[in-house]
Image 1 (tube, rainbow over the protein chains, first blue to last red):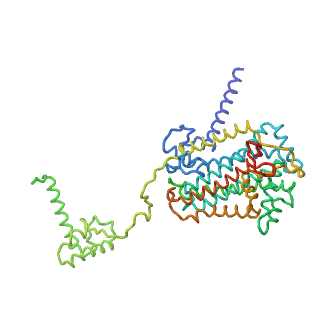
Image 2: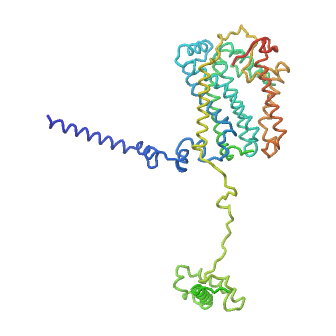
Image 3: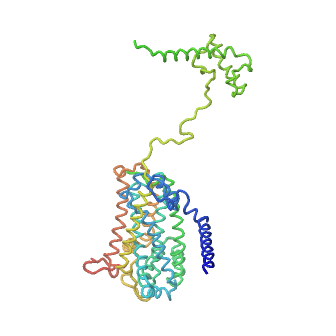
Length: 260
Length: 239
């Protein structure tokens, strides 16, 4: 019996050893524990490692390795641009959650929201967060614009980025406004009625503008579908493109503007 | 007079003698290309010829046996100016080095903390304050007052004063256009607040104009969109 057991134990050990060799020889292992990796030797604070944190991560798309000293002063930017971007991400995450429980038709929309709030775990909380961060984002984008203006940061070479920025402000308002209709309650319906009536006064082709926006002559289930698509797909898509250009131009123009 | 140390004087004399001897040498070696010293083997002979010819010329012009010391090197090699590379043409030299800091940790930490703070704020706010959900939309029941979202209440406020085309399109259109064109209209290169009093005043008036209108529209308009005081008649405002 003892003779039988020993080879079995050895075989298992051999198999384990083989498995270990396989794992440690794999591409994933050797890239995680590559020479110089912090998983191999730990992170010690050195200028070289500080550079690697940015250079070896996706953050390199957003930030350079080094920035001007004044650019990290919170009292200069108040973090407003970064916060607007972060709120956009937060809104995307909470918005995706809401999409799982919402159908954009006049017959179902309001009931879906009601169900979301009463029967879905964290449903009320996530909807609250989506609503309040949306208002907050309008505010931060607006304050970001004011900050940039008062610092004269729109002056050469940053003229074009200012134009992109004003576009982004308008897209933010549109995103918020299209989302306003989706709960399909009295507040949504009549706020949007007031808003679209105003757009109907566009000179020359006001009626057509209103028709295109409403998907008909008056607000209805078609309007809901139209605004839903604008809200969850088209406007975010456009905003992401404009943000990419906005961030790229910040670096292209030599980082954020200098001190006054 | 101080005495020159013996060994230095000897070295200087030896160097002088060597220089004298070699400046004489090209004049003597001028005729055959094959007679080049063994040390110069690596230099192609036609180049060497050219160099020797160039070294001879000033000598012959001056008529003296030894050319001036500056025109040829100690070993009979001539340094000639081939081209001038101006600084900055190949390598960009910055006149003033900039004071820079690492993004990690100086910027990323601040960004991370700001993101954390705003997440916490919106989470706490959402726990304690519920988003409004009024009753189902009803086309036959117009609420009084009907208000647009708060950021459009400035426009709605203008509607009470002007024709809709002026209030809803012309004024905001011009405002937006001027805003977009700001960098092309404002040609003042200075960023210092004391140099741009007009621009700053104009922007402040512009921002205040909309802020005040939004405030009035939000808090000071009641049933029939009539002017009210919120502390008397209550709040007619939903976010």
